[in-house]
Length: 260
Length: 221
Image 1 (cartoon, each protein chain N blue to C red):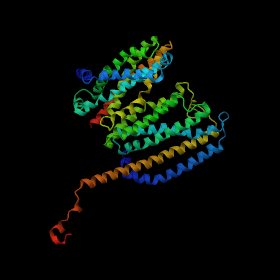
Image 2: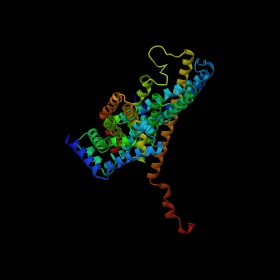
Image 3: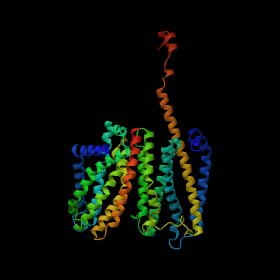
Image 4: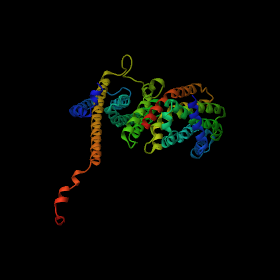
């Protein structure tokens, strides 16, 4: 199963067909989600219209965590089975995850200003998401920090697995510490504590963001593979003897006077 | 075990005799702490309020300063290859090197901290807590730092990369260490924070050498 998808040529073929569908679906679903969230959904009885930030903030936060989990799992696969595509997937997913984390932090800050009266508090969840952002940056810097890209990939894989310790801390920080950030209201045992009219747009947006992640991941992985192909071709061209430069016929047959 | 202690003694001797790693770290610690009164002003009540944080952040930066020396000299002169070839498991070798790093940096930092606590007007009743928290917490700093030092071996701009990797991972020890000292300064029981700090160190003790050894293996590959 794993080795079936280890062939880069097959991956390029499958991803080329899948890419337009993923891109179209994510654009359509995010458009529907934004319409539902920004226009159809009712304003909150306490927070008013500002609650609509939630439809970007919460899916971005979910994607920030899930993208890190994806990086970590792909890194584990790359380390254990030396799967060639897993390492590329991990290194391609990290900047996308970092972008989602940044969106989550930025929208959270914009939301905190009217609701809590401050742009930033040193609250457990905010701090741990910030640490997640720095982990992403560290991973990206480490992966690109070596002259040998394979070495960077292996070092990054180990770092991604070390950083996984942070994920449960973020997930449960609002339950462990009594903080300003509200507790989880969707993913919990029993009934969600959120109205259906607000839950629907949220889930649609989450689906749209997931598809967006897949689309961007495919684009980045294809770019990375193409880059490697170009690098290999260039190395081959430099290593091979240059037959076009030799001119045995002209050197032997042509009279010296014919040369300019 | 003889190989373990042999490596430990060798590293300790090198860091004590060669170039004065320990002296440099202590000087950095003292200078960083002494800079703060210039920055925030000399009022004793302001200093006393921020003293736990200052002392812990300065200790953490001082520990960070010497991390790039943990594996790099051995990596460059090929000694690390010999350590990897020896019958001693690489995990234990990593643990021995981290332990030597702690004895050469973390332990002196903890021992000298009471003197610096007086400089920044820390409540005298919190000094015992400060020493205890540094004694408990700095092994975690050495162990976590060992992972990052091994990961960045052979990278371009290793020093900057090392701090970028290590500082996010140093947040939990810093939080619990500083809040233990703060609880001590306010006359409260620092037990919970000290216990959490011990939990961090105890969790790092088996896990970090394992990750360090994996990182060293791929560096030597």
